[in-house]
Length: 99
Image (cartoon, rainbow, N blue to C red; front, side):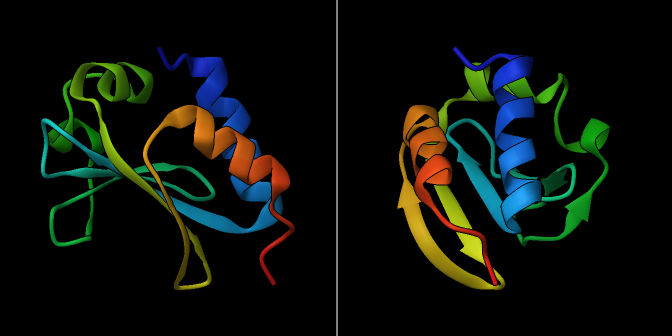
């Protein structure tokens, strides 16, 4: 289960280290982007209003929809692909800043 605190912890690491994280969900073609803030992405990768993409807050969406994959980007380069939230936390803790 992913909590609001979990998301805040990951978002802080993403902001501080300069990464972009894309979460692909099982039950939606829309995705979640973690950058300077939490954003909803359309299936084409465009930013969309959260309310039009998802009916609930991020932590509820992640739990309800399930994670297919999590991608970590440095600049626009994919540096790691993971399959669950715990792996993401460990990986972000171990990675150096994105330059």
